[in-house]
Amino acid sequence: MKKREFKTESKRVLDLMINSIYTNKEIFLRELISNASDALDKLYYLSLTDNNIKINKADLEIRVDYNKDDRTITISDNGCGMTSEELENNLGVIAESGSLHFKEENSGQDDVNVIGQFGVGFYSAFMVSKKVKVESKSYKDETATIWQSEGVEGYTLSDSTRENIGTTITLYLKDDTEDYNYSDFLEEYRLRNIIKKYSDYISYPIKMEVENSRKKEDSDEYETYKEVITINSMIPLWKRNKKDIKEEEYNNFYSDKFYDYSSPLKVMHFNMEGNVNYTALLYIPSHAPYDYYTKEYEKGLQLYTNGVLIMDKASDLLPDYFSFVRGVIDTEDIPLNISRETLQDDKNIKLIAKSIESKIKKELESLLKDDREKYEEFYKAFGMQLKFGIYNDYGMNKEKLENLIMFPSSKDKKMVTLKEYTERMKKDQKNIYYASGDTVDKIDMLPQTQSVKEKYEVLYLTEYVDEFAIKTLHSYDDKEFVNVSSENTDLSTEKEKKEMEKENEENKKMLELMKEALDENITEVKFTNKLKKHPVCLTTEGEVSTTMEKVINAMPTNEKINAKMILEINLNHKISDKLKELYKKDKEELKKYTKIIYLEARLIEGLPIDNPTEMSNLMCDIMASK
Ligand code: ADP
Image 1 (tube, protein in one colour):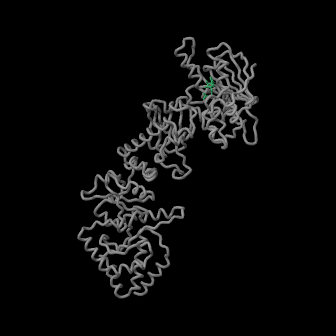
Image 2 (cartoon, protein in one colour):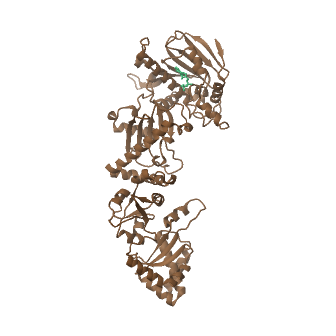
Image 3 (cartoon, protein in one colour):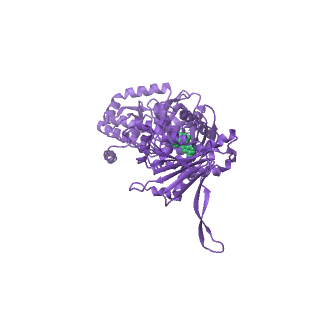
């Protein structure tokens, strides 16, 4: 028996594993099964070119056994095996370990986040074992060898009498502690679950002896018996031919994997070949998960390489605005030991992410074109996310998303896209008009909306992100977005405008007096002829609209902003005559009237009233004086 020491850096990784407090210790099984699967691959490919190696592909398999009395788990394969030198070189040394580098760069941090994000390999066995024994016979060697180690002290090599080619790894589990129950791994259901979870799509059977029960013949009693079964399903759904997959299978896979029991709205299954190769099985859910619009929601796709799960939620594969997409990516073009940290810098991951993004975009565009009803269902669930996407990152992605958004229209209150809107614009129309408010009905009744919609179509913005997105877009197809409540929105003719200017000039003194009666947010009071039947409205001057004021002031920050507002009074309404009359007779009364109509205008806009008592007192005063 030969005693050997580990190389220094291997010692350190080993030390990291042994003392790991990482909660995901269960991944040791994934790592050992992946190694076994690689060894089977190697032997199989060798057999294709080397006539001396005779194997039957159907015999290649992985076995997992456990023994409660000995507290051992064994993982065996009939793959290529290792010679004594290979055992030494492969298991005694860690050549280039991602985890080690990461650990060095981040020394001081605890291990919790370090391990498990890597393909930590064979050494992960030491997270759960006090002793590891590897017995192996290589296809190219006559003799077999046993490699054994109890940790950093080193390892021993000794001869074995094993005759079959392949490798058997025996893990002697650690004793249970207050913090961790290692015995759990000796339970059949636990092992089965771990295998299903991480290694379901390994392409060789993973066999295990399990306990079953059956009804005894000629009796109502049951008896238990043992049988060896294959735990993994072996062929991943995404690797199968699209033509052979039923909708039900896609849906079952979706609900199994992503715990959503309503059917997905859309399934995307495709292979990409080119600069980078991958297979994708993506789903667009039919409704937003309950936590979708919260910080708790985690975006990401499952990342597999060669059927082995590498990461559960690889967030770098999806842009935020498509964060609702769930699914699986399988690629051979990334290193197995990729981590969350190295993922974002990986060239191929970037290529895949880009390609996925354009695929999803195209899919949504064709859904919009071909199945309007479904698209609107999708939009109801996730439209807000698209609008956030336009607004976020300083509008960097607005061009990508502008054709995917839609708003209710004044025309029929149905949804309209920007493209549809501009295509049916009137010849003389230069701008895209919008109005915002709490609900479609409320917006529809706004005086400003009423006056514009008679002439042109108006988009109704009801979600708080809407106006921010519109402002970020600024224009679509060279047509600028214009708020109907903006002071500049005046559809009257030049002649009418001139007349109004004259009217306002003549009543300047009175309008100024009225302005003084109001709070400082009112920058001007003026007459207008743009309102049809309505007596008053509030319009805004500058960038901040009243809706934006509402949204920003509702945010949990101390920053408060005030839209600059103009109180406009319909010159053709009786109230204007009354005001003019009061100006001559009773200036104090005029102030009261002014306050009331201003507060009314705020109510119409859905803005809060600071002092409702004052308003009701004023009204009662006036009513009583009649
Ligand atoms: P990795 O698999 O990332 O290379 P590991 O530490 O898991 O790193 O394994 C080191 C090497 O040991 C493998 O590359 C492989 O050559 C060899 N090896 C591990 N397990 C087996 C096995 N079951 N059969 C044959 N070779 C193995």
